[in-house]
Amino acid sequence: MARTDFTPNRFSDLDLICAHAGQGSGDGSPLVTPLVQSTTYCRDGIESTAPHAYSRVSNPTVAALEATLGRLESAPPGVCFGTGLGAETALFLALLRAGDHAVCGRAVYGGTTRLFEKILEPLGVSCTFVDATNPAVVAAAVRPNTRLIFIETPANPTLELTDIRAIARIAKTAGALLAVDNTFLTPVLQQPLELGADITVSSTTKFIEGHSAALGGVIVSRNETVLERVRFIRKCTGGIIAPFNAWLTLQGLKTLPIRLRTQSDNTARIAAWLADRPEVTGVNYPGLESFPQADLAAAQHRGHHGAVLSFDFAAGDRFARAFVTGLTHCRLVEHVGSVETLITHPASMTHADLTPDQRRAVGISDGLVRLSVGLEDFRTIIADFETAFADAAVSCGLGREGAGRCLANA
Image (cartoon, rainbow, N blue to C red; front, top):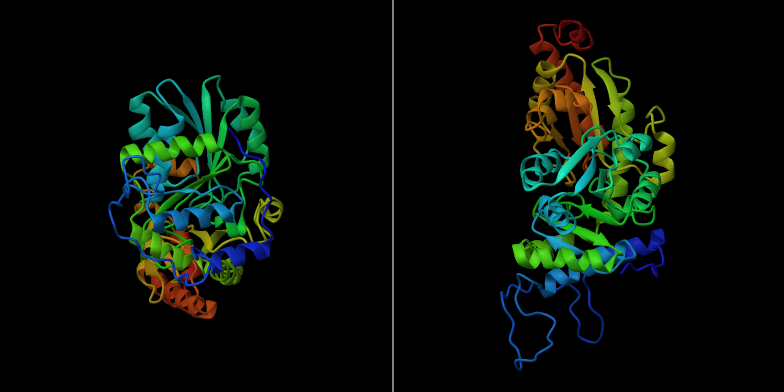
């Protein structure tokens, strides 16, 4: 049955929950959550009701993380997995069976698309990919056998937004559940359950852990039936997060609010600077006044707009590759959410498994670059960019002052 007796968190609540993540109470309680590495637990007898029996099913350190992540969304304890994609897989196995249909936003993580097309469709689960920014298109894709609508907002890597409230109304009318991938903003900057979603899915590997040290994923919901089913799937498939990774994630979680706010401020400054560069034909960041969905961002986000942006070079693949490999302080990786600034070329990295037509359909050109801004002084990153722009222009044969003209020679 669904739970509805949850009081939304205030902003100050989130800071408190994160700072005290995993802590117990009472005389002699450890300030830092203990790391319990045991695979199994002793029982007093056959009829023991001890909370933990085997760490494939549950673990004290994992349980502390799950309780905290649930509290951040005014919900029961979440269900943690070894990766974000592992969490998505368990969710789909829990809610979908042969003959069922799902509707998925077309601008999502490439691994989500691959999971639907390569794993679920051969098992008899169909999926329609749609432009989720248009509620009418989502509604038109719904069928009598639609059981799930899955969206990611902001989307990876285009940052386009989906109106969670509008899609939640469509899902409710259809008798389907709405799941939102909230990896980019986390509960600190966006609360999908408060906006009408039934489920949130996040890769804790990214901003929640924040230090590129521990893989993980989580499902949070106020629907007890969904949580029970997801936990059963995890028990059967063995996808639980490792205790050490859960412990590292708890440590990262303590600084999540202050990290995200600082990183968001840095990102807004870099986005504004990029918007004036002649090499750049478009900057995708919800915090810009020029962003097409700025009003939705203001209504849906909690004061800040995250630490991920993307921008496009009209000069295409050649210029983009020269640029990302010419940076000194920005690390070229398939990742977001760390304390360091990270850069990715989606067409050749995160979304390489998609066909060129699929990438074009969701706005991923060969010249698109994704940036995850860290905690460095934003001026350091801008200076690094200026050098990389000039060096990329040289590789185009235009000289160090000709980066803006490189567009005509794509």
